[in-house]
Length: 325
Image: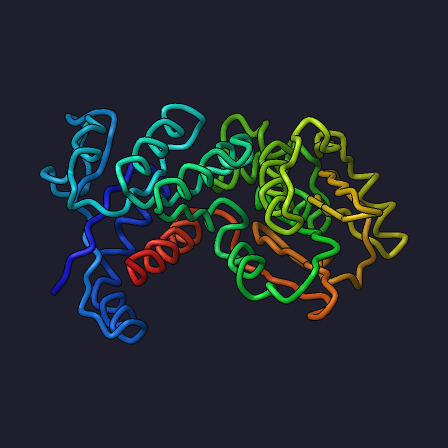
């Protein structure tokens, strides 16, 4: 049995989810790798990078390290999964890992959106894989669809709900007549929103995600400063009611459209007809509509937040790399 050894950077919400899924589905993953490749392979976590080795973790302590060099210098580790988030040291870790001939998987939308293609460039130069399905829309496999399923298409527009927190808030306001403040508090109580929800409700999270999708769909680098952005702090009960009276719904949409050779991108609350497919995407769900010339319009929908949904997308990338090594 060949072991595909991996390292996980970070053991927070998503990191713990990845660890648990890999443990629970170990035999299933072995079986599916064999079905796909005919090879007897097993995915195994060899090291987990954490900040405090003395903290109590629900994991074999032999797996834990505070020193990234332990991972970087281990030639048996073929895949590094970056789940610590933020810009640094995450960016440095990923670049160093790829230069050490390790494949990299991440859910770090901020780094991908801001790197101007640097990480993809380093991956190509070192002939390793760099994958990031979990960086956009949780369980929704929109990156795989754009990269693989729609290769015979020219995409003209992407429109989606890519932030579960804001969709939950607007759903509460629409369906239960909650104020913005009440809906936000409910989202925080359920763990859908952070104690500081600014990145979600002011649109930064959605901006990074639509930038990533736009780059893939339209094969161009995206200037984040040129993306029109407006959050949802200003949405009131009156706004919600007025929309409902016009048979519309307010949804927080990330949109990108190619017009006359230019890509126009925006993130903002939008009134859409109640019959539109995105109008009935409720709670913390995510959904993305893609318009293209041959396949027409397709819509993908699924859980967009939480430990298990995001970890599921990460494990999908791990499986993909493990199958192709």
